[in-house]
Image: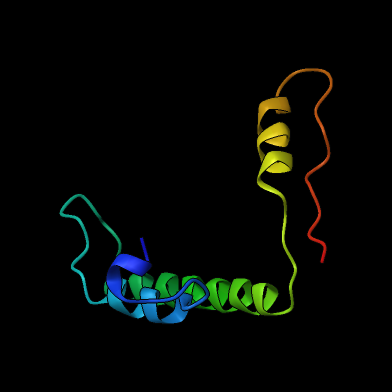
Length: 84
């Protein structure tokens, strides 16, 4: 998706800036102050994810899928950990 916007993977802050310019859906009921706090929080999380990617930290998609599939039953797996 990012490539279709002319961005490389890892350009999360740029993607987030583009998303911030879009109006909220009409069903939202957050105040402008709440919206700004949420957007700042989202931007921080995206920056953290970009830093993890730049450092080579990843979580295998198959491990994530297995963990999600295990949620609920008696044999729930621990969340997968990032590694290089």
